[in-house]
Amino acid sequence: MKRQFPTVRMAGGDSTGKAFAGWAAAASALGLGALAAWDLTQKRHSILRNYPIAGHARFLLESIRPEIQQYFIERNWDGRPFNRDTRTTIYERAKGTHSEHAFGTEHDVDRPGYEALMHSNLPIANSPRPPRVRIGGDECTQPYDISLLNVSAMSFGSLSNNAVRALNKGAAMGGFAHDTGEGSISPYHREFGGDLIWELGTAYFGARTSDGHFDPDVFAEKSQDPQVKMVSLKLSQGAKPGIGGVLPGAKVTEEIAEIRGIPVGQTCISPPGHSVFSTPIELLQFIRTMRELSGGKPAGFKLCVGSRTEFLSIVKAMVETEILPDFIIVDGSEGGTGAAPLEFEDNMGLPLTQGLMIVHNALVGAGLRPKIKIGASGKIATGTDIVKRLIQGADFTNSARAMMMAVGCIQAQACHTGKCPVGVATQNPRRTRAIDVSDKSERVKNYHDAVVAEAARLMASMGAAAPEDLEPTMLRRNVSVSDSWSYARLYDWLKPGELLGDAPEDWAADWATARADSFTIPRGHSR
Image (cartoon, rainbow, N blue to C red):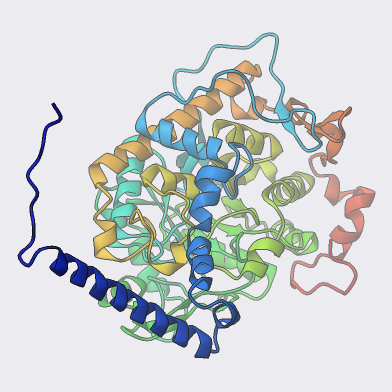
């Protein structure tokens, strides 16, 4: 027999329920009517004027389009800026879980532009210790042995306090360097004692006078701290070369003001260019000053390469003055940022491959390459990325966004809104509490160690015991569906000192035009 359940009735019987439903329906109809009236009379959205009420569905779907695209539509290999395969690899290595894939590659290995590393029929055993790179020239009294992969420049302010803590603790545990970004050294950079690269931008945050100029005394005091291992001058950033930044007064809290050395509550504008130099020679003289003020630590500069002639002007100044930076960090136009105009992100500056090879070959051609180390920064995420950049001319690499993902970034691309859903790129305390520093710092270390180990394993499979054993013949690119060329054939590689004698035809005009005493280039001569 079917079981019968007692019926529960509201006081007043069915009439009360029907009345309540009627009132709810009337209220809903009234609300929709009011919304329709508002939509028909407002002047901001044309869609709502023509399609009242229904038009809101369009805005709702548009608001979740990025999530739908990222999680349900994009394929494993074609997402941007980082595809799903790369993001998954970062997360798995950060967690210390497997990062192997089954059933073969999903990439079209015949397409033009596809690149492949060349293995050896005589691979060698992995070195038990990952290689490190010594940075420091003749005038450097405190050289630094840097890892093949380090935390690229990201300031406190663009990142949360807990994100900076996690990155620095991870760097301390893993023995790699943490670039402060141009926002100066914060207490969160110091808390766990990880090695620091102090970066100065055009506003000289943390070492500036009240009117925004460079303060040598303050810089000397801070840069001589043992935790600071290198000092770097930022000429330009890959994602937004040639422009400064604006920090709205509302974001200049007492904490930010104290760290950066600016007035509380006042909008701070970073100029597009530096006030400490105006010529290539003056640039090198200031690099020497930074080295001396820091107590002999490695000093260098970072740039996104634009005009080849302008960079050759710096190289000519090196030759004429014999003042050399200890390192140069090359940032690619594909690099990341918390916020930049779309026109700059998409169209300004050279990609990392082109910029890196200009810098490397220019230094080789001037006979200076053995004395200056080169870093590469721009979408470094896997061991393959490291090895490719070493072949193209770098000595070490830096990563920003991949390190953010190791802390928990999900590529929401909301860095500029203050609403980062995982607390990495925000100053909102409710959001930043999502980052457990102990757990995330361990993930940063795990990620670094795994990627460097994979880079070493790739080199060993190519028969290279150390980065200096890598050659341009070991990296090939499809130039068509039927032809693959090595980098030795794709690009011209200068011989040591070649620019100082009879410069190659492709470089001769730019080398002749470059001037050690000026960045100004005659029209039509820049490449």
